[in-house]
Image 1 (cartoon, rainbow, N blue to C red):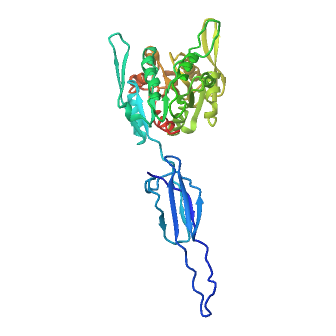
Image 2: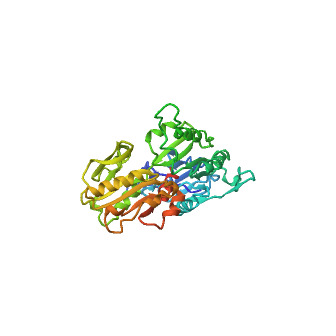
Length: 408
């Protein structure tokens, strides 16, 4: 078992002889120092006992890392050579080993996550169906995950796949695992969180209630990791059986912007007030443009509310894109106001019905012709497959951020 302790051992008190010789005073003898480290069990630390000159001193043990020593079953003391002092310092906290399961859609992302950390091990699930279409599922080596930290990487890309994944999500915590984490990069019903008139169904609340009833594992409530949920107040839709952890893809965007040759000429544009409220604090070091949506009859237009896009590389930022109509209208408006380049970032590229085909590359001609870059994350696996080799799209992977969240 690997452990270390912050223990300081000093020499015992020097004892002056009762009757020293007249010619010389003999040097004091140093009493032997014995340090006994007794394990208190896994992850509980050790009890340190320092014995010097017949006295026993108990020392507090701060165990946080990786100094090899004998098994806890042995309590034989370790003899330390006399020295001015012995200091054992802690190293970095050991990473927990996580067994990561995944659905068919998220296999590629799961492999990228595992490549980010040797503490993450991929595990398989057999996804089959009976003749009537209902799922026939099998979790491999179920006995082998007992006492382990377990995670599942989900993708609720359509209602048709949610039930089979929920069946696995409800089963894993009941297999005597130490803890369970559900990673759902895209919360698909997040934009349906409001009722505009009596009779509307807020399906964001419905899905949150379903996830709130995941069985509790031996380690407690399920940890639920979601990236850039549409509205932050949706955290209150979840019950006490889950612990929502809301992450963001914006750090990936900021890192990519720093790599651009014109990184000192970037301006961030928000297509509406909701996007500004959602992301402006994370992007406050950039000049900002705020747009607004205006209805004229049956049509909706985007207007410039605040900021100056002239000669700037303007990056439109939002949490998700569906049909893309708002982003295209925003691009046209910014180009008309003199923007030098126009790019876009969304965390979740949903693009139903291949709506990504509406977005063209500017081909160096100018912003009125299209986008210089369109950044999305790999939170929507089907979209990634369709646009990965098509300009202006670039994929910013969530793999490293997810690997880090599994260590929380």
